[in-house]
Image 1 (cartoon, rainbow, N blue to C red):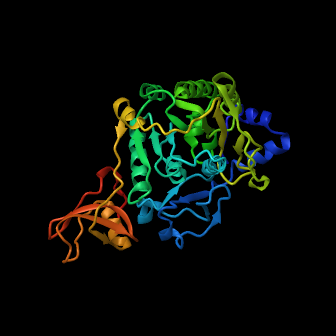
Image 2: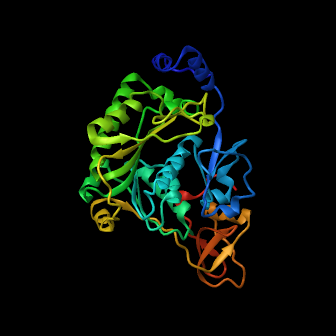
Image 3: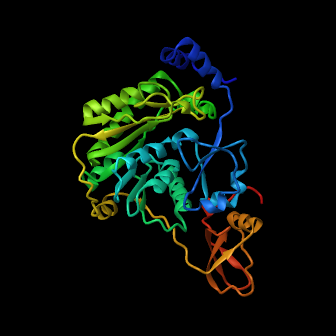
Length: 393
């Protein structure tokens, strides 16, 4: 049984009836569900691999009955799927609601502001219209490198026409690139992490009411800094992985009142267990997931939907961009699971005798993993050292 801070318990008791508070506290001692989201642009190779309960708010999401060794699955490294908490996949449902309004019937500019490790960015890549631009940003340098890796793996070998930038910047840095840049911003704000309590004891140790208050102020500062870059009429999804009203409902109302936005109602089926619109809470005693919260806002004014193509030049001039490579050239050599794992471990490989010398793309079940340089007697491994499997194969 996990021990939770008294102040946290009192906070949650104030948000629920006594009966529901008991249900909530009991759920905090239940096991966390395991879920993945398939890459719809690579889904053919994974259709028969994973069997499980579908996640109702995300067509590509699956609950697994147990947690396999993802590290030892070459398809994981090939970006065929992403291991993602189920509740956060609700972003897919909101994106599709926006599409249904006819808002994304042409290319748009989108920003995932606090993006690492990349679950929501890979989801946005799958949902955005062709020829859109996606900036996926992370302020912490080490986490930005993880974001770059995950975006690389999700997009490599994919022909979808979306221009992706991975950036390592503060929210205020984006104002240097100009105003009215984005049709859509996802702000998954740094928070007190209450939704992580079931799987991260450090989150419990770090929690306090003073930290909740500090997070609320920091979240408002982040949104205030990025707000001028959102076009009039543009959408923002504000989200956290926490339960308290200060960081959630109160902040959304503050954004609407102080910065100028409408809080959008989106109908959600009652049997999903999500709290009533427009404030979407995923409480573990109601929905099969963790403590995710989100709301959809629309900035006051009219959006012309005219794609600002000059944004590419502004990005490269004003932001720190981390390049990703998602295209590999033939020849391709498809390998078995054991050889794929050896490659991902960083080992040199032996190619078939007829393999030409030079750069070769290694694939697994038709999906690219990376490259080797074939010099005849062996093929030198070019898989990035920082991405390699550390476990013994």
